[in-house]
Length: 350
Image (cartoon, rainbow, N blue to C red):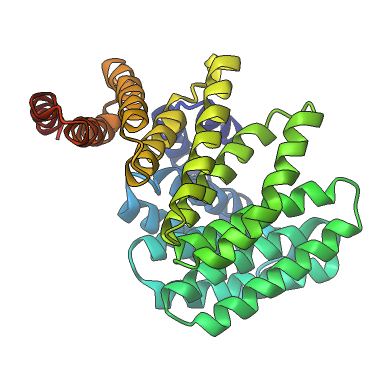
């Protein structure tokens, strides 16, 4: 059932996946009530999976599930059995992220330090399996340190994580691509915490690498990654007031996302395309390309209208924003009447 919940989530059936995750917890709770030692680990793991499902829309309930998962592991004895350590470390990571979502960063730091310690033990025993997970946990630690304004510690830990993953990647076939994906995540962490210069330095090195992967491999998963990298590039450039560079990256990102939508319509990449087009509209506006800004805003708006009409009401706010983009572009082009109508539509969707 845990596997079914995972598959439902991956396929986009998030409510169904959440319902299934709740059922799994209920089932293992009943089993653990009668046979604790046998089913408690399964209950702990299912609570972690439930917390993961709840994070985006139900953060408080997610935190409760994550805390219960850790409590169950600790009830297994003074020392967590070695075979359970990987799942325990995963649950610590989930709990740390839930605490961050509640702005309890000091508590998250304590939890994630424990998670790092567990990952270090596992990496010492089985480096091939656990070094990437250690590096990823260190990346989560970087995020928390930045949130706590411990900049020097954050930079030190991020360099350790990069070194670990790079060394690991050089010792295995296919490791280079994994390392590049990890670098992209690190760059996004830097960007999130307003270190755009450092993020852009990494991104500029990665863009030609991903472009080559897109051109020369059959791995379709690298195409959305390439588009995300271009999105991050234009956001970095905007932060650094490099407006013309931002426009070029946004145009490239929109082109790639448009190709994704055309080539794999079943994947429904429309939300990502609409978001990128909204960014492109802004880049056009600040570089005084008002006609192109209007075109990008209108296409973005039409996509959000389709999504909302299909019952995806979580895009209602994005649709209102797209109408405001349209109004701004129309006003810049001197169409005050059209701009007023667009603003009224924005208010209607707010």
